[in-house]
Image (tube, rainbow, N blue to C red; front, side):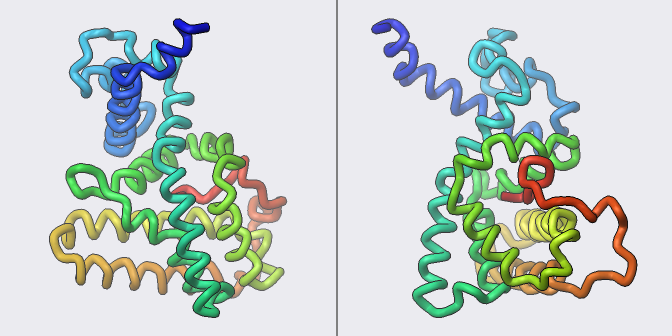
Length: 233
């Protein structure tokens, strides 16, 4: 037991795990899950051990879940803070405000190079068809769920069958805005805020747009975060 505790709290081990998680976040964002090998992730942190990722995480799916667990605690706490501020200001049921509450933590999060690394990662996960992994850690982030549920209550009941699809489309819109900021406004906070505010306004309009006259049968299904969760959360 003592040996296991030393292993669990070994600072060098934790530093290696964190480096692997952040390397995976970057590589999955750029090349997708299927385009990134475990060896590439290990090599990205300068490890000569070709099995270093397997030793710490087992495989790609567990590594993906650990990226969520690395980034989402701070994002979840920040969403709670922003929702509390909105409620104190009397705007806790305003759709555009709630969209900003949900996505502002992603706007605020950047890596050591100033890029919106987590939003990029989620885009890569969506592109690789592995978004269901996000639902596997859903219960660990209650504040995110609370904001998401609050957004749903702002929408007309007839949009419920479309909500999963709209979440994904809106998340893509926000993610692309963050990529635009990385390319064109990384050193211009005022322009970055303008791009983000514009994306929030567009997202609020998109998620609440009237339902089309004909709804695809694939959209008529029970809302489930396990099967379809917000790809940028």
